[in-house]
Image 1 (cartoon, helix red, strand yellow):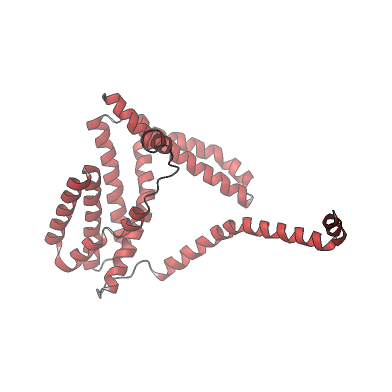
Image 2 (cartoon, rainbow, N blue to C red):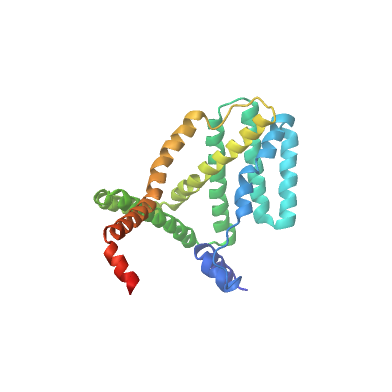
Length: 270
C-alpha cells in the first residue's frame, strides 16, 4: 500500500470513523464503545501514585518503564507510549501527595503535561511521518462546529436565540482566527479534554490513598462538589422538560376523556 493510501485510510478512520468501520471492519456494526477501557482508564495512574507515595521516585520510574515496555510489546507502540504517559502522570500525582502540596497544583501540572505531550506527538507525526496538516485542521474544525451546535441547541432550549444570533458572528470570526493559529487551538482543544481526565485521576488516586491509610489531602473539596451539584441542576432541569411535557399531554388526554363520556360510550357501541 502506498503512503498516500495509508494516510487516506488514517484520515477516513479519524474523521469519518463510523462509516469507515462499517465499510472495512464490521458492516453490521452501529457503534463501537470501549466501555471497559473508559471505566478502567481513570484508575491507571493510581498504582504509580501509590508506589511513588510509599517507595520513592526510583522504584516508580522503573515500574513505569517496565509497564510501558510490556504494553508496547503486547499491544503496540501506540498503547505503550500512552501507558508511559499515564504512568508519569501517576508519578507526578504521587510526588505532590508525598510533598503534601495542594491537589490543585497537581491538577494544573498534570493537565499541562498531558496537553504538551499531545501537541508534541501531533507535531512529531506531521514532521516525521508526513501527516497532512489539513487533517488536523479538519478535526479542529469539526470539534468547533460541534461545540457551536451544542451552544445553539442550548440557546434554543432556554429561549436565548436572539442573544445567540448576536454573538454567533463573533464566534465564527474567532473560529476562523483559531484555525489560522491551529497549534494554539490544538493546545486549547487538548487541554479541554485533559482537565476533566486529570480530575478523575486525582479523585481516584487520592481516594484510594486515603482508604489505604495514607495521610494525604482530600480531592475534590466539599465546596467543589457542591458547585458541581449546582451546575448540574440546570442540566437536570433541561433533561426533565420532555418528561413533563409528555405527562401534561397524557393528563390532558385523560381529562378530555373523562369530560366526554358519551363519546367513549358511542365509540364502544360501535
